Length: 456
Image 1 (cartoon, rainbow, N blue to C red):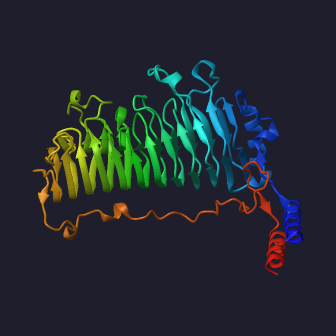
Image 2 (image 1 turned 45 degrees about the horizontal axis):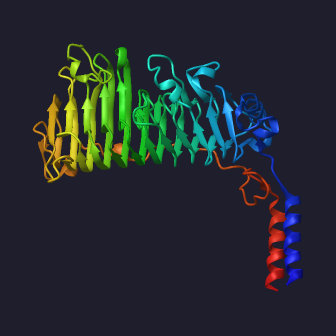
Image 3 (image 1 turned 90 degrees about the vertical axis):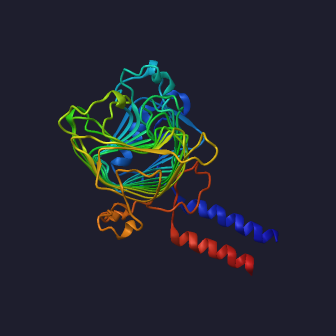
């Protein structure tokens, strides 16, 4: 038996010889990871090497360490595709008093094809030192600009000075399994903002912030959101759109199987008076509500929180049309479960509600919430509580030919490169969390030899 154990240990030793790692660890380039030392230059040096083709396109932030970083820009294009950034340790921003450089964002990835950012580490924006300065510039924690075929997963994002994640000008994006946390009172700390991007999938995330859990802004199309647990926060929002006369465009959005807990809003569409353009073919389906202030709301009089002071004097508005609300259940904190405040000049059109049941949370007796409907033209309601006089009643909405079912179809994504690491992490031994490439022939032979010997 001792001889067999010796053979197995010897196999492990030989396997380590055949095991190699080409991934680059930021500590190899001088990062200290004590949470105090500025490790920004070490990260940039590591990035230059990885982007330049060294290290099989893999950059490692090792576990068990905390790296303090000033604003950083990781710029493409890169020689390797994909580029994998594995964050296993913690990243922490400088405080406002010690901040150096750009206040637009903290960490920027730009012009990178096939970028993968993943891991179980934490990105801490140290936002508390910024929040009291609401009128001044505050940085978004993590921004991706012009990064096609982007994958972001696994990380925890906390306390950004402003929005936690911003996606701009990116196509074919998948975001999954994130945790995003900031106090309910923290200003403008959106979870995920999307703008000028298409074919975006966001799924299976837990988001609790002081603003929108997810905000879908102008220039977006084919957005799929599912499995989001949102709250506290301001819900999942289309917009705001049309500010300062903007020509806005949002289309083909599907939000489904999401939970809203104690949020200010649930499913929200918000547009500024005086804008133009459109928000169309939008579906909210399979939504659970728990004590939500405004469960369903369209607000074409949005004025940065002062909608009641807004008037319909503007000559234009963003057109809202072909919106579906289906399979909603839960409670409203206010007396209203549905609130459509549309423009008199550019009314909302083709609004559909099916299988909606919203009760007031305060009554405790299953009291039906009320509905408010202003300037809605051409809509249908089936099994919806509260009912709305502005929507025609129907016993079978699916038979109505105008239902925009296409809003929840999967996007037609382009063919994407394989963004998995070049080598699977089959063997991890003394690697401090690195991805390790293994000579497959040697690995297979040694494992086979070891097991054959033991079984023999």
